[in-house]
Image 1 (cartoon, one colour):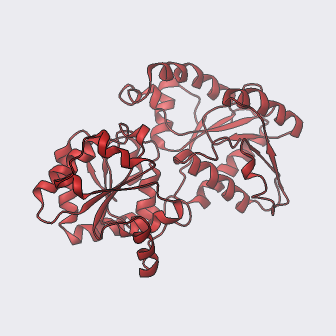
Image 2 (cartoon, rainbow, N blue to C red; image 1 turned 30 degrees about the vertical axis):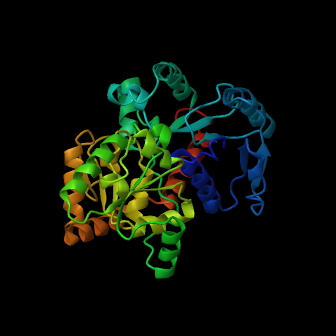
Image 3 (cartoon, one colour; image 1 turned 135 degrees about the vertical axis):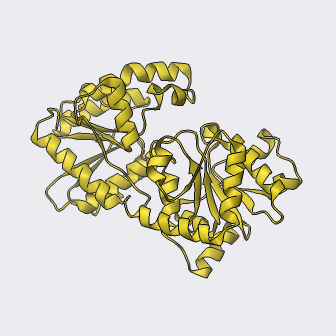
Length: 375
């Protein structure tokens, strides 16, 4: 089920990569049917004889999930249906596996980042989705533990399978490639990088990032500039009342950065700053680690789990703590080199090859058990 294929966030990254990696891994033993909503994707896997690509109509995602997909499953006589995003078709005639990208709605301090009605709806429907599924993939151990604690699930009903940055994320050292990306986005010579989005700026903790950068800027004789990437992020200047002089003059908004250019941007950055309030599997942290970029991130939820000792951890609610960590890293070349080396080493734990192998093994086990809970 690939209705999330077009999403620009982590779920879209996961959906696109898990399909490509499962097909890369397949040795002809399995047939794959790919259900799209967007006709533009038809034919991209036309070179795979074991792949059938279909457009499934459904103007509303609930109709697509709960009516159109079950009908398609019955027509195609599937053995297993896999949805990379957290819904499950209740009328699917075959076993279902879905991936959950967090349990935020069930954790009070995390649920505050969602609307009250959204929280109530997910709390009501998610247990039913999980009951329908033969198995559930979780993108972090924190997510697995939260679902197990809140819903008291059978042992191993939810299995943690980490995903990874796309294969092209690596340290870029070619001067010409770096200069081309630097020119394309008009990046400064020395900068701190953060990535966010307008509708998620509260969750991404942008207010504290800006306050921390203002403090760091005041305390530093020759401060690095701050690059804030993301669609329509230039609107933050007015929305947050950033001044034209002082620290505000040193904030750069390149807007959306293309995926193919991100490794060079990470490689150019002196620091990746990501003190987010809420993440299950923070894909930008793994991208920065794979590029060897020193990281400052939050000491909470999935950020700690994924970053491990390859980052400086801060209190996301304390701008002074964030500012101190920025200054500590940028003023110490040895600390930067240590964090870079630790990030590169830790990044090897998160690979699409491993993710695809574990995912395929789970799908095969579900098929063998004909939809019964797989232990």
